[in-house]
Image (cartoon, rainbow, N blue to C red; front, side, top):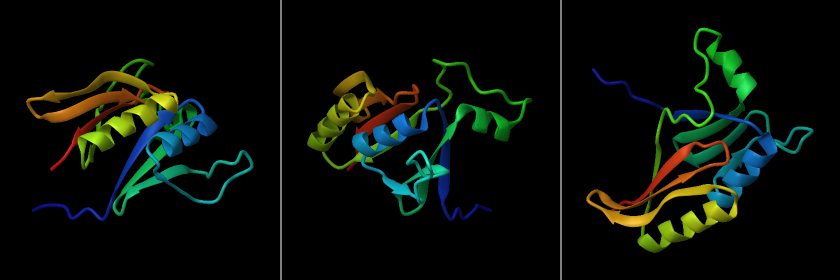
Length: 136
């Protein structure tokens, strides 16, 4: 029996709400969800990636609270997951990588042809790694 998911939310710990909001809007162009709070950032800080996928960016102390003291967050510099996103063309991937770099992200592996396709690895300002690939 399979589960019929209505949607998926990815939640990532962040250090700075304003910086993260600016990065994800500038680099990826994801749609911001919600009305701005006093700091100009919606609470919770969420983006709609597509019709069924949401990205929530939660301050470290907030995510730490949700997970509880029995499940501490990974230390800085530790990658526990690899986020993936497909784009339509090599040109679109090149433009996205440059937008990520310009918005303050880090290119970990420049776009290149691999046995599994044309791909690049980039990290957001908090070190979360995205594998970007051209999908047919």
